[in-house]
Length: 297
Image (cartoon, rainbow, N blue to C red; front, side):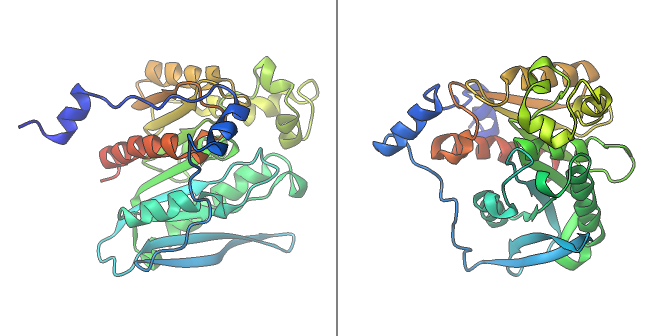
C-alpha cells in the first residue's frame, strides 16, 4: 500500500485558482463562492495562552509578544514564530491568530511578536525589534516548554521581509540559528526599480533611494543569502498587486544556486493577502505542515 507521503509525491495537490483581481476575490466572497478565514477565532479549551509578555522597552514603549501551546504538553515542541505584515506601518501581532491557534493545536508552541511601526521608527528599528524578540524566545525555551534547536520564523508581506532578515542573519549570522523560514509573499530585494519607487518602502527606510541607496541594499534579505541560511518555504500569489512575483521567483533561483533547500509554491491568480481566503489558507497550511514535519520534527 502506498504511504500518504508517497501518494503526495505521485499525485500532488493542485493549488486553488483565484480570481486575478482583489475586487473579484471580494465579489466571490460576497456571493458565497469563497469564504474568509476566521480572523478572530476563540482560543480553544485545550490551548493555553501567555499574553502581553514584554521582551524589551524602547523610549518608554513596551514591546510585547504572545505565546500559545497545548495544555499539558509534556515534551518540548518546536517553536513557530509568526511576524505580522502591514507594510511596516500597520498591523498587530494578533493578526495571525488563525495560524497561532491552528499550529498550537497541531502540537507546536507558537509565538507572535510586536515591533515598532513606521510612526515609531524607520529602518532598522523593526528589524532590531524582531531580532531582540527572537533572542528573548531563545532564552526562554525552558519557561514555555519549547525546543530552541527547532525554531522557525514565519511572516507575511512586511512580516516575511523581517522573518527573512532575522532568519538569514541580519548583521550577525551567529546571533541565533533558526531551522527554517517561511516567506509568504515577502519583499526580497529593496533595490529593484519597482521597490525604489514604492512609498511604503521609502517610508520604512526613511530616505529616498537616491539619497541612501546603501540602506536599501542593507535592508534587503537578498544581501544575506548564503549557503548556510536555513531551508525556506516560499508561498506567492501570481496576481499579487503589491509584491511582484518576480521577487519570489528570484529568491528561489538564488537559493537553488547556493544549494539551500527550498520549496516554492505559486498560487495561480491570487493577489496579495491571499491567505485571508479559506481555500488558499488551507492549501498553504498543508504545505507548511509538510515543510515543518521535514525540518522541525
